[in-house]
Structure formats: structure tokens, C-alpha cells
Amino acid sequence: MEKTIENQNEHRLLMDENEAGFNSLRQRGKEVCAVVEKIAEAWAALEIGAFDNEALAQAMANRNAVQSKVMDQVESKIAELSIPSKILQQDLQETAAYNLRVFYGTVERLRRELHPLPFEGKFPLEAITVNEQGLPEINAQGQELLRETSRVYAETPLERNLYHKLKALEQAFNGVQEALQSSSYAGIRASFNPVSQAFSYSDNNMATLKPEAVKSLARNCRFN
Image 1: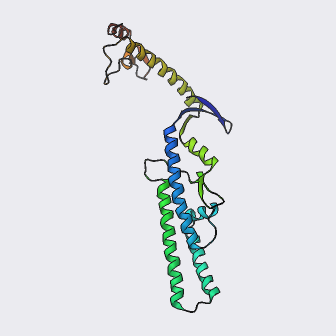
Image 2: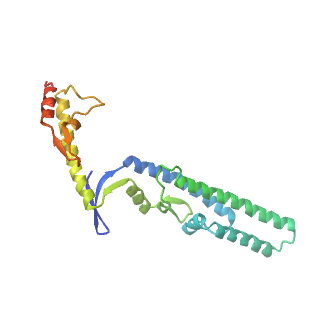
């Protein structure tokens, strides 16, 4: 796969695009959206406004601000309803505290879902947006972000130069392999590759073809 992409005035060469990795990220996106829906439900129970993108950002970044809003809402409700009973006031406060614990639990679950294991890539929360119905979805920009996460580029002149040379080496190497296999080369086995042994290497790792290797390869070929 080879494709040159211009980005911020720099040419990037697309070396690989992991479709399985992209599909895996999309599946993880669905799982993340499911957790965000739980956060939306917990947010609704707090009664501090509609759940939107700003609410999601606040939920992830500012726990104290959410708690302050909730407790201010409780105090306003007590004052508005003129509730004199300490028991009823305590009941409202305990209900709010319980709803906050549920809310905090769903937020922590989302944090774990974004980066569940050390060896897995972090799922980008910016790929998720909350629509007008208050439901999370992977937006168009997020789809492209996930696609980019599954791509590997050669970005510098040195990387591009190495890529082209190594691809040429790959083609030449495979060409020799195919020639040997088509002639039923007797020495091919899983633990030994005769092509890689056909070169000697200098102190600075420069390769030189060994003439005797050509003779040896030819002797072991059985032509049909």
C-alpha cells in the first residue's frame, strides 16, 4: 500500500492501514458510547441541566464543579419548597449524594473503557459527540480520527527513502524465494532461509553477495 498524503505542508507516505485495527476501534467506540449513555442517565438523575458535549467534558474534567452544582441545587430546592423538616432535608441530601456516587462510578467506568489495558491504544474521547437528543455517537471527524489511528506513515525524507529501498528489497527477496519454490528447492525449511544466508556482512553491516551461495542454491534446485 502506497499513498502520498499532504498534511500541514508535509508529504506523508501511507505505508500500512490496519483494517482489522480500525474495525476493532469502531467496536470499542460502540462500547464507549454505551458507557456514555449510562453517564447521561446518571446526569439526568442529578437534575442539573441537559446532557450535552459540555456536560460530558465537565463530567470527565471537573468532578468538584459537578458536586457543587448538585448540592447548590439541593439547597435551592429546600429553600424553594420551604422544607422545615430536618428529616426531609436529610433525605434530599442523601438522595443527591447517592446519585453523585452512581454518577462518579459511571465516569470512572468510562475512563477504564477509554484505556482498558496498558498494551491497548487509548480510545480518543474527542471521537464521540453528544447529539441533539442527548445520545452519544461517533461523529465524522471521529471516524477519520479512528482511521488515522490505524494508519502508519513514513513522514520524514529518511523514512520515505528507507521505505522505498526496503520495498525494493522485499520484492527482490520474494522474487528469489518464488524462484526457489517453483523449482522445488531442497533446502527450504521453516528454521532456515537460504536467501538470507546468501550474503556476507561487513563490520558496518553492508551486504555482499557470496558467489558460492549462487552455486549452492542452484545445486539444490530440482527443476520440474
